[in-house]
Image 1 (tube, rainbow, N blue to C red):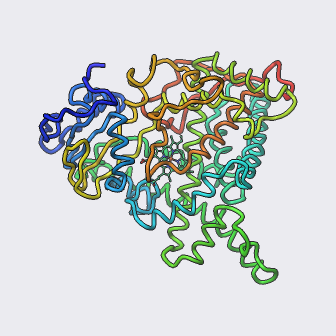
Image 2 (image 1 turned 180 degrees about the vertical axis):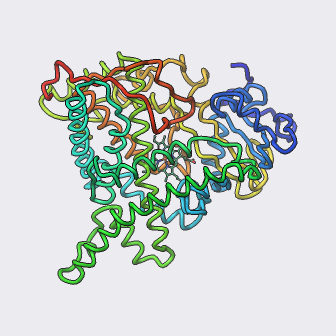
Image 3 (image 1 turned 135 degrees about the horizontal axis):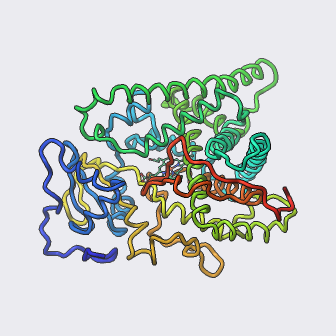
Length: 493
Ligand code: HEM
């Protein structure tokens, strides 16, 4: 590495308190520097070779700081998490959430409302191993995986072709896993309202993973007004679907029951939707509007899982030996007599390691944080309102953290037959704003990948067609097809 610090070094006591960083251009600041590479995070890493583990940037009129070492990322997210609980005030974030980004759990500033919303979600999004919610997660994942396999089979039979556009099917399966688990309702893949909802969410997931000049140059807004209106339209469509097809139905059933027998709501909530409705009744600080946004936010989590699963398949077709090893692991557990379930995960380190290695190599960015008070990082002054980029791309790809980081090697996460994650591997971030969905991601993705590979051999139709971006866990809504054929040796097929 060209830079002189390591994750363990302290900054020299003699350094100037003036934070290093390039000289910004008038008006646009350092924005062009971020356009020089495929991902702004690559540019962040390149600049860290010049300016060090912490440096300042000016993006448009926004003061920003980029932190690239694990030592300082921990200082921001853990030791001083309370000073950095805000999020940037970007126009697109507002457009995606009904004109107010505080409607979103990931893009809002920290508040007591956010604490409440996270609290409601925790039981359902992070179910304890062997709890009734964990059993439910296993059940819905297994049932939906069966439906996915039926749809893939149907596709292969009716088109008489092994070329399958698997991404929409994966996303539909994920959407149903989420809606079954959180709302006790699933939809037919042919249902056009459902398909549109899945497609809109996928568009938004792709969108949220992009950066645009207008994010930091709001005076460009007139040039983006059509785009912003399109995003607002997508969120309205999703709202209509969730309201009409998920919540209304639930409320009607509940009202019908209240007229007669006591409702099931009087006991423990039966799912996340029930829990949200119970909080709405009991907590005067919550409104109907909050409940709907929270439900939509979590249902939308399915896009992240579907895109990640697609990226795992992409890694597998690029590295066929990885798929073979997963199949060997599947076969040794099931002996060809049953389907994989969530409780097998602990015995299948290679499969779990493949998902982890995909998370490392795709390196989903940590949502930028914002200083909510005047504070410091590594003794440098940071003004209230400063945007802080946590460069986890550097943590995931630098040679000081990983041996041969450019290689896709799931084995790096296995030690003595067990999963071993280094502490600097934080794909879901850490601290008070850490991702709430990681158990759902790991559980659903594990089932999707194992069940697909249990039944099929999956390879590339055309490796050249497969295009992935660095530091991005999203693929464009219209992605490449894969070649899917029945496994010759599978007893279950
Ligand atoms: C590929 C899958 C996913 C990855 C890599 C991922 C990663 C992340 C990261 C890096 C953050 C930012 C944390 C921070 O700012 O410090 C985050 C926030 C968040 N994630 Fe995820 N996530 C994934 C899927 C999900 C799913 C499926 C859900 C919901 C079911 C979810 C819910 C959230 C929420 C609510 C936040 C915001 C937390 C807050 O700001 O308080 N995520 N995620």
